[in-house]
Length: 86
Image (cartoon, rainbow, N blue to C red; front, side, top):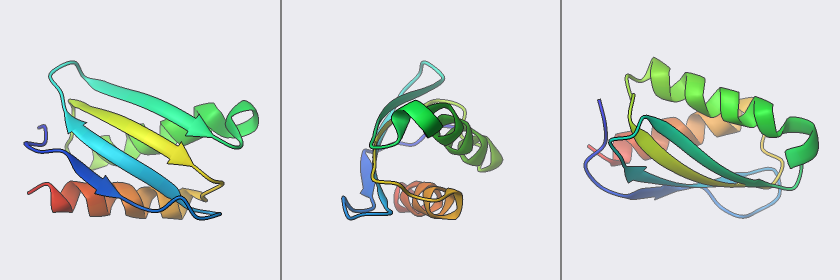
């Protein structure tokens, strides 16, 4: 499944993540900017990918600006954005 429109979710506040989800036909693509990219970049991408797959999304482009969000915040933002796209 894929989304039909561009959606945004989150903020640029500390301990949050701002997401822009765009329709795509090229699988799951993630562009990540993060204040903790060196330490947690791969983990953040894994959390995003797993949540998208859990929700049945197999083709999407995600642009993420992370400000130190914890896993549950990332998952909530992904879910909120996907639900906005319906």
